[in-house]
Length: 398
Image (cartoon, rainbow, N blue to C red):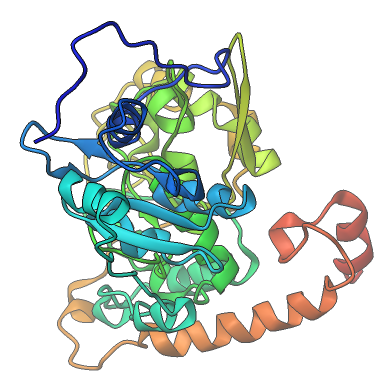
């Protein structure tokens, strides 16, 4: 067996001024101690990046951020990356670096000390991307009626516009919002890599998952804190707005969120990125998402609804609506009133238009925008236009 030397050990983790966190260094430190005490051969160690959390029986547990770590390892010129087998597929997306997934420390020791080969994890990034490019489970064909609302959702999806749905309980606001990702264009490979990196850093990747090819749909509860929404903490982590990058952030019952939570979203909505500053460092996470919000028109939910009693006083309604500031509402391009579907419509046998048909129109509209903005940097669809571009392209008839 192998033993930790029975004397004082000094371990230098350079650079010393950068604070370290997490258990991903367990395997690194263990291999360093074994090499420094001459219990294993050390000549090939410097060619490999070795990371993993060690359990008490020597087995390895998954780590956070395998994909960005692999990218950095390639940039630093490492020949290979050894990490827990659960993260190997994720790291193997990166080209030009060998990735080896291991189950326990013994495999790593035998590789360096006894030249026992490790099996390289190979992933075809494009094949992985298209394999995971499945159609979302929710479909607009399930929604009876609401043709005008579906049209508004289509326009929002085509231009990347934020949208708010206002209506009484049971009108179908949540049902419609959950089907929005099904009409968005498929992610590009670049977008998929961006999204996977963010989820990897946050530790949200499932085991043995390579690439996230579906657009994210995040639906946080209204009790969420501002740090959980925009990101932060002692060691800043991506929040919900960054986890929704390249996808949809759905805020159900918008006035139920704390006003302070909603206000911290204003800048990220404008800049499409969020900067988290701490005493020693600053981190910027991307947050280019479509905001979809829903709300009732009053605390009771039935204001202006024919046949429903008005049980909210003017003061209660004012207090309810004042939770959403004017500047935040200004950043939501489309405001639409959703009314309940009549029973006759619900009982119709005629099938509604499927998401795939709507998506084809959305993709055609996106193609036009791509051609229009091809000479511009960081402008890909209508919602990203500046005032100057709006005056140029959106001239109204008299």
